[in-house]
Image (cartoon, rainbow, N blue to C red; front, side, top):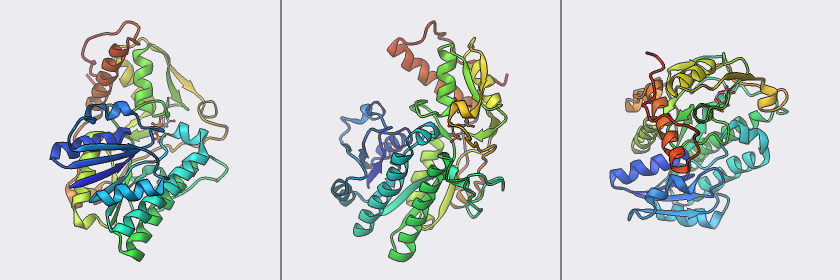
Length: 340
Ligand code: UDP
């Protein structure tokens, strides 16, 4: 099979590329390197079944050509990270809405199956926990920049389902919950890489708000495995699936775990949301997926617990920092267990 991955130089896309190459398939990547990094695919550059194009999903002829060459499309190219979204709402909306329009239109011309990566952000301010795929999506006010991301992704979902129902294009939608693992960068605000870097560099660990908000962190390997199985399963077409872990942790507790596991002397500080993001910023207090649907179809179950995920991310950042020489006085020890 020949697989096209838009956003394939990103954190999740590059892991997906690895998985398909390990399976013996061919991988084409399209990425404009806006948030993706060539470092994520450097190890694949000379692979005989791998090819990449540095260009944008807005570039219709390029997308048309790549869609033509592949059998299936994973559309992962999107603006990511709450910080980036709050700071650059125009490109967020344009990338998420126009980019997806281009990909779906080209896939429809050629009749190629498409999986669209959506997000748990679409549940917005809903308090119907755990979030089910058929639950209401509750958006905040349009004056609050954060919700532009949720709305743009909700439009992507509507569009993908419309192509399926009206034009018969096989589309699959996945709502990815907080996904973490090696290669994820903290540059766009994601909490685990941010805390791990802060702890390793002995800078203050910045908990936004009072730290009582919680999240469930899923391991990228588990998530990518589910994407591959959904793409293979005929029953996934025309459906929406939550993918993530249901192991809940508060952000305050997460900061403590990372501090202990890195044996860091960093102070844990609280930063008000309006300083961290923008005035009037609204966070989601809890975000838990109901994964009954994806479990029922493909038997998906998260296999990597949070402390193991953290150990892997810490190891990744330690290695990278050693290569770059950016940690002041690193410990070579294994991360301590935060739950011992
Ligand atoms: N967060 C934090 N400190 C940081 C970055 C994020 O306390 O340096 C919080 C953020 O406010 C949110 C949670 O961690 O409550 C998860 O943030 P992230 O951006 O990783 O993902 P989100 O769930 O917001 O999409």
